[in-house]
Structures are given as C-alpha cells and as structure tokens.
Length: 124
Image (cartoon, rainbow, N blue to C red; front, side, top):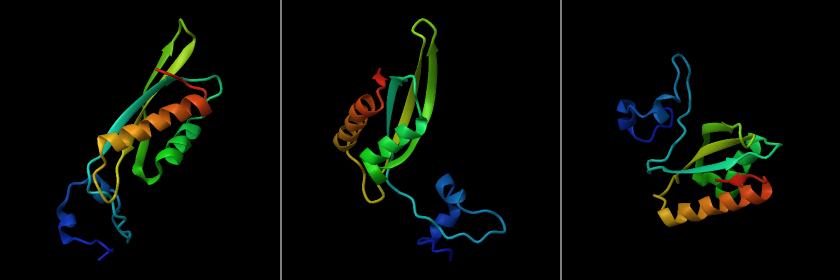
C-alpha cells in the first residue's frame, strides 16, 4: 500500500512520515533515514554581494546526499562594523548508516574552507 515497507509506520508520530500524506490524495511513500542526524553550525560575516542559494549549493556540492537541510538560524546586524552575520545549521544524515563525528567534522571543515574562499565570507 503506497509502497510503505513496514505497516508499523501507520502508527508513527514522525513528521517525516505524516507530512507526506494529505487527505484525499494518493501519494507514493518517499523513504527517509532511520539513522540519527548530526547538526553542525557555521557563522560568518556576509560579503557585500550575498546570495543565500550560493551557500546552500556550496554545502550540497561538498557533502552531497549527506546533507538533509541547511537552515538560517540566526542573523545579527552589527552597527559598529556595519556588517551582518548569519549562522546556518547544517543537518547531516545518511540513509544507510550512522555518520561518525570524524566524517562530519571533515565535511564541515571543507564547507568552512570553501565558503571562505569561494563566497568570500569572514568566518566567525
């Protein structure tokens, strides 16, 4: 039924399952990871020309399918410096295994390096 692999999912409160279905619509189930997420934050001062989509694309180019989401969680305007800081939360998660801290730390370091170099952000 709906390509749902395990009938026990019908009793779940998991928003990743529930949000896939709407009353009166037939929808094919899209699998999601049963492994835990690993959240990493990155904060930096924005350059004068800033496009948020460029940062999301950079993260996905570095980590690929291991990135579940990139979310702006804080914004700070410093009137003394005349600059704006953004803090993003990156949610790393694999479909087939738990990620190790070492693996995610390596990806996060690559994201930080590429953001500073390619997007000319000033890391905080």
